[in-house]
Length: 220
Image (cartoon, rainbow, N blue to C red):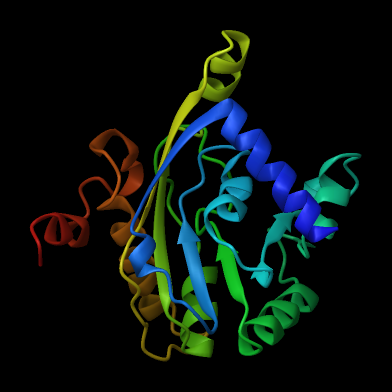
């Protein structure tokens, strides 16, 4: 079932979008790692199944889609699961940690929701926590062209959307205690600034003037 759904996702995306990908060489070829990506629109999750050919993706989906007639069966068919974004969902956390330790690839948007401003929002520390706790490499991914507004607009015009994906080099965070809020905030900023450095200026949003982003843009 998962193979069939993946084929359908790729077919649909090729029909409605012109997708380019940079940084394939940065994807680890084996073992577990964490993908941290910006979140512009509903197509973002499907895109990861388009350019990553692994069956052990760990894809948490917002609880609001748990009873949706379409999204629920799609999520379950590709091994995804639902997570409560607003409470400490201990069951979901344990599931993520278990799959990561078994070599899975954890995919998450640090912002926690689609950006209505169509640029980076202030991120939550969840990604930093998972990555530091497991010691897994983080693969920053920057996505452009998936804004819901643009996708709908292009569909109405029978026009393919231009979507661009950039995968940056992986990096590893030092161990961080869950109670060390300053360290988690610093690590979260590092993740988001690495994503922001791969995005065009108009997408950098909350992190546009962050000193760490400016360092990365200057090659530091």
